[in-house]
Amino acid sequence: MTTTPAIQVERVTVHYGEVLALDAASLSLQPARICGLVGMNGSGKSTLFKAIMGIVKPDSGRVLINGHAPLKARKEAGIGYVPQSEDVDWAFPLSVRDLVMMGRYGHLGFTRRPRKADRDAVEHALERVELSDYAGRQIGQLSGGQKKRAFVARGIAQGATTMLLDEPFAGVDKRSEATITRLLRELASDGCTILVSTHDLHALPQLCDEAVLLMRRVLMHGSPDVVLQPENLAMAFGLDVLNRG
Amino acid sequence: MDLVDLLFEPLGYDFMVRAIATTTIAAVVCAVLSCWLVLIGWSLMGDAVSHAVLPGVVLAYIVGAPFALGALVFALLAVTLIGVVRNTSRVKEDAAIGIVFTSLFAFGLVLISITPSQTDLNHIIFGNLLGVSVPDLIQVVVLGVVAFAILILKRRDLTLYAFDPTHAHAIGLSPRKLGALLLGLLALTSVVALQTVGVVLVVAMLIIPGATAYLLTDRFSRMLVIAPVISAVCSVAGIYVSYYLDTASGAMVVVTQGAVFAVVYLFSPRQGLIGTRLAKLRRQRAAALAA
Image (cartoon, rainbow over all chains, first blue to last red; front, side):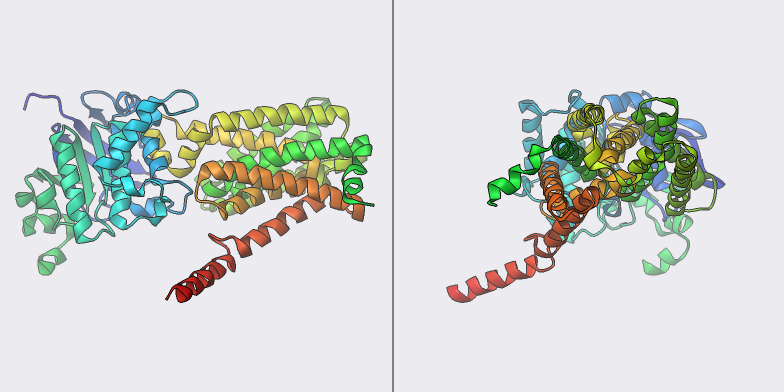
């Protein structure tokens, strides 16, 4: 383990007013790994994402992306983000192709006028997620799984080396879940580092190389099999997980 | 009198030509901006800023500074105050907006009431389309062209900001700066539109065209064409109607825009209340014929 971590979170603490959202959370993720971030609502998953992207400034501690401050990673357009469905305005008048093109904006000039190389990158990304046939659709006219893949395509077009996905399996059927899992595994084998926040514990073992239990602090970080042991989940979720199996 | 005479008679008056030129420019710039405002959900913000500029314009008049400068200062002041009240008290954003803009607007009215030469300033409130002077027109052209050019050049960034500020941040852009740019352009545009319809009705031009276009298309790039075209046509039509019916011209422009919105709302083939049902009936009938 001598390589520079792709994502390094060092004792990050974040308050929103009086509320403590992250309490000295630490996490180190090697390149080309997929890590599942597991925790209840309010456990700080979204805040951790925001801290990694540099949207929230930690009260203390620091974040490094590939050994650099997040700003540098952002300028290199290295961080891709797939938002939760609720955070997206699906009625926005954009086509799938328009959405994926937004991944290229970091590489474009003052007016963001796309060149041929950018259009090629967009078509390639659409092919990769198998949405070429849907490129002209308005984004709201996609199924749950296709919507997620469209945002993943944006990250691919962007050339992101780190991807953050917020609840990618919410509102997605089993088949799409398998498609997304396969896609993310492919991206990881190409060297992309992926952090996935999820409630969906069934999907984790197939998807993730490792898992993290978050409850404002990182309670545990290890292989999914170990982290998902009922007694460990009970720490993060409270006891009723045991009964639900 | 035939149609050609109807169209050309008003153009025989210089004041009508200036009125039509001013309105068209204001209508186009407002309409382009409105596309973003309706998608971000900033309609109320548009209302607030366009009212809050009033004291700035009056003060600029008193000290002899350009109206645009005073308006810009008070637009920024209004946005800052709204943010401060929202973030540092338990008052919610809509209430904060309501408090700040009505207070500033009222302050503007007070200033007008104590400023000599009231006639001129009352025109700011209700517009004075038929009294647009040549210097007024020049100011509208200059500000309008500047606002329009910035909006079009930065349209992709502004759309990204409207749709997904988190992604904008993630690729190294500054959502704060883009938001500030949009607010600055809102202030500038308010000044352009003041001349035409007055402070009270500016907000109509800042919302209706974008909302109308949004009901007609699923592509933002097309909204940016549809909104200004509809807005410009409505404005010119409104002026002609007001000329022949002898009604208030600024208000007539807004009534026309509202009427067109109503038609689109009902009959748009994609989103319209009746239009979508008609389209469904037609499909069913075609299916029945085919069977």
